[in-house]
Image (spheres, one colour):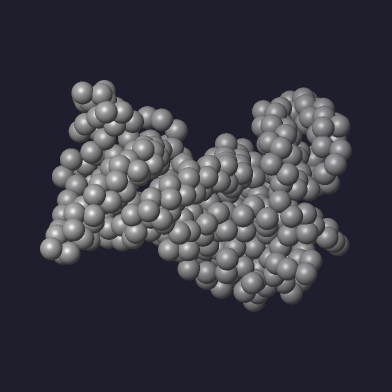
Length: 330
Length: 89
């Protein structure tokens, strides 16, 4: 049994990444079934906007954990809904605060925001954060992610978000310094707008902006600390024995290394194994063998699991358990 | 009579105090303006901080956005403001 797929002290997080269509969802579902059968309380979450986790389990899923078998719960997150409800809530909140602002058309601003670059990544990160915050309910949390590109950007986000937040905290500190300096001479200052009076906060403890910044930094550091911790997180790359998925996995491997996110396992799906000789298929098999040799060369620091191509599409719990057994190991 | 003198001194020192922080207040406003501008970056196409962070800060930014708006309104008279501050008539 692979120890980087099981919890050590605290709950274990496993991310399945890979190019579209290589079998991420099936592999992750298989692993989740296998781990649940071994007695680990497992949650599998699909954060891919094009959901098909429910199709693999052959049940309808939504954004609440639903029991599939004993010890196994599954859910699908609806990103679009998440973003919309978030913005709506905020719009009402802001309309109240900013009545005096007629120049900035808030509706337009929100239209821009909901299409602003990166909103999907941030919403995904937000969703991952919320699940991790409640992670203690589980032994193992498995994320079935969108195709590599988006996932890598999401995994890079904590790093980038921290740079931004630290810079903003710096600027905010300067503002508060100036305010304190003025306050020392003028006394407490009031800021009047639209007939309403606000006290100008000058100390970190009483400044709501600073408080938000520090809270946000805390949350992001929490996520970063989990996903960069070898004892708590593993990334499993899923691919086919073809050159394009190989290149993509290699790139993913590189960027994960850069952000210090542990990469442990490569699952190679749909490997053709045939007893008899069929010339046309033999060409394919030779090509696959060549790619497999490459994979062994490229990912020396990771385990490699080969999953054969089956006669039928592997759906349903029995199939999943069988494949899961292959991946998790005995 | 005393009351008059007291009022006079209060006014005198008040204006003295106001003048003494004029530069710091200008700096403060500049920083507040920049802070709001950074958060509104996606509006004008400059890279902006994490959207979720922006969204969470917005409700507390009444003052900064007010300052930013004033700054935009006074944009055509930046030199006037500078001249005023350095007492150039």
